[in-house]
Amino acid sequence: MTELDRRSVLSGAAAVGALALAPVAAAQAAAPAAGKQTPGVYRYKVGTHEVTVATDGARSFPLTDSYVLNAPLGEVRKALEAAYLPPDQMIHHYAPIVVNTGSKLIVIDTGYGPAALNQTKGELGQFTYNLAAAGIALKDVDLIVISHFHQDHVNGLLGPDNKLVFPNAEVLVPAAEWKFWMDDGEMSRAPKGRMEELFANNRRVFDAFGRKVTPYEWNKEIAPGFMPIATVGHSIGHTSFILTSGASKLYIQSDVTNHPDLFARHPDWGAFFDQDPLQAVATRHRVYDMLVADKMLVQGFHYPFPGLAHVEAAETGYRVIPMPWSPSL
Image (tube, rainbow, N blue to C red; front, side, top):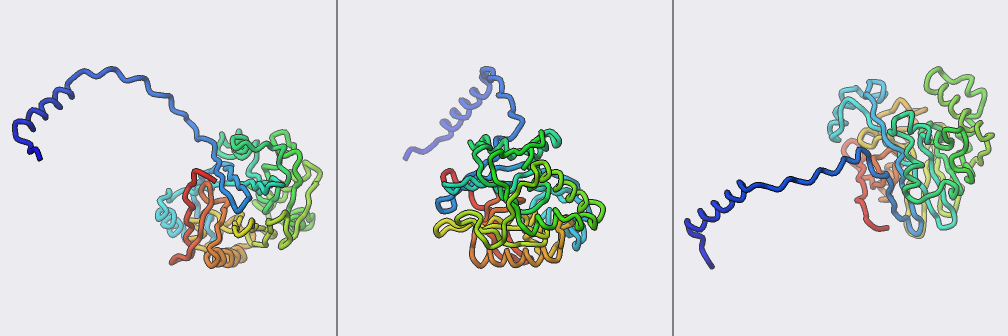
């Protein structure tokens, strides 16, 4: 083995120094910054079914002491900090999905709708843009299945022209949810504020196409291998779904939890947007205990994109573990 001596080390150092002092050719101009995200699309398979997650966007807003009904603001801030999130604001993610069964193309919830793109300067209303990037034509959608009647799930039924975004699709809604929100007596008793606004918005959306919907019942398949399950609390007819293909299963939770770092980690916390907070907490425990026991994959509408995960038990509740990105289906 050749050994380095002092002379060779010094001569090598001198050569490096000379290179450092030599003139360098002018660098090429930098490429312009893109200034925006690439399309938010992710695909995976459940058995033979193909699932496409197409984000509708995300929005941030200041955290207030009314966001979590039964926890001090300081505790909520600690939970956000523990997840490496800003302690003074909330971030809500929105991720509708499309299921291709081979015979049916099914959209599950619709986001805020294309009109929101301009209203929020591109923050929300991205769903149809991302569907186009995924190669999914709006005219090819067969079924739209709504989980519940909050704006981020139903407003995307309509475009800025107040016409149906998915012109050839049958719209399916939970029977219990439809009965409640279309009841004039319930609307007359709605408290001022959010509930009153929800009644008005739901009438606006569904009246725009003559209330031409097909109500569905829980525990009866909507399509082969696609079962709606009652998960009430967040709303009176809130619905989740189990997608089955062969030996593979996916739990599509809708809004059983909102942001998992708060409401999965702390399942007893009630959110201001839950219609029946106590029932929502009971439902959350029931569903997440099942997900842990069965080791079932879950797709979360409000999980950070793309929202596919497993759930395991943790000290204060549950831990949501995102599935690793896969380059192939």
